Length: 444
Image 1 (cartoon, rainbow, N blue to C red):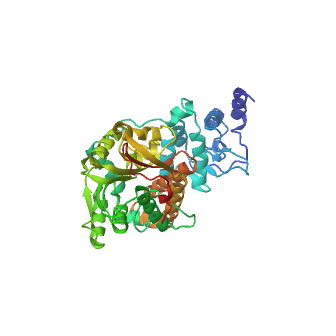
Image 2 (image 1 turned 90 degrees about the horizontal axis):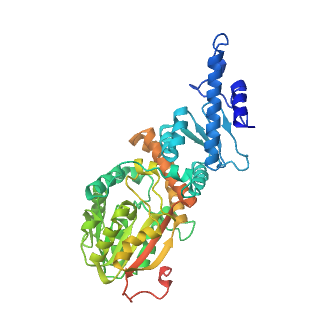
Image 3 (image 1 turned 30 degrees about the horizontal axis):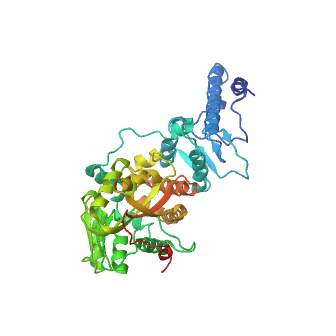
C-alpha cells in the first residue's frame, strides 16, 4: 500500500494498528466524542492528523532500524514486534514528546522519562540495550548518526573554575545519597569481578588490588592520585602496600569525608587529601594513578594532563589511567551531558594517546573491563531501586526517575558495547625496570 492510499484509508477509517488498540489515554483526542452534525470535517481533520502522526512515527522507527520493541502512542496506535523477539514496550503519552523525539532522540527520551511522559513496560535495562544497539550501529555520516550526535550549544569549558562547578553538580549532592547504593567504602568506579559471584564490596576491593598489582606497588614508594573520590583507593594503597599518597579532588564533600576517614583509621600521616585541581599536583612521585577522572578532563586538556604526569613522574616511574571510553570518537550522550556529567567526554584509545605521545610515554598494558562495569552498574541499580523510597524523601520523583535512567542507561551502554572501560598502564620510554610477563597481575 502506498503512503497516499494509506493516508486515504486513515482519513476514512482512523489510524491502523497491528494489534487491537488499548483504550485512548486520558486527555488525548477521541474522535468518537465529536458530534456528527456539523462537525464531520473536524473529526476528519483529527483522523488525518492521527494518520499522519502514525506515518511519521513509522518512518522514524524504520530509520532507527526497527528495534525489537513495542511502542504505544498517546493516540492508541501500537506498533508491535513479534512476541518472541519483543524486549518490552515504550509508552509515549503525549504528542509533544513524540515531536521532540524526532528532533533530538536521546535528549528528548531521557527528559520525557524523567518527567513521566514516557514510560517503559518491561525490564528497563533490557529495553535500553535494544535501543542502544540500534543507535550504536548507526554509520558515521548517516542521518541517524548526525541526529544522535547533536551537540549541546555552549558546552562547558574545563577551566579549573568550570571543572569545580561540574564536580559540585554531580558529586556534592550529599554523601548520604551515595551511601544508599554504593558499596560501604563509596567507590564510584568500575568494580572488578574476578569471580562472577563476588559481592559489590568484594569486587571493589578486588578492583583496588588489581590496580595495585598492575602498578607493582612497593613499600616506601610515593603516589600521586588525580581524582580520588571518597578516598578508598588512596587509603587502600597506603594500608596494604605501604606507600604514601597525595590525592587530589575538587569535591569539597568527598575531601572532607576522605580526611575524616584517614584520621579515624590512623593513616593521615601517609595519605594527604588535597582539595585542588590535578593541574596543581606536586612531585616527584614513583607512581601516578587516575581512576575515573579522564572522562572529566576535557579532550582539549589531555596534553595538559600529560604535561602534569611528565612533571611529577620519576625517571623509573609508572602510571595507570582508568577511564570510560569508546571504540571510536563520538560525543557524549547529550542527556547525560546536560543532566548528569556536564562537560564529560569518554575518549577512544586513539584520543587517549594525546596524554602519552607528546611525552614519549610507553604503553605497557591495556585492559578492557567493559563487562565488569556493566555488572557494577546492574548492582548499583538494584541497590538504588531498593532505596528508591528513601531517595524520594531526599529529593523528588523527577530526581528518582532521572537517576534510574542514568544508571540503567549506563548499564545498557556497556552491555550493548557503546561504552568501554579502559585501564592503561604506562611508563617513560627508556625505563627498563618493567616486568617481562603479566604473572604479577594474578599473583595474590
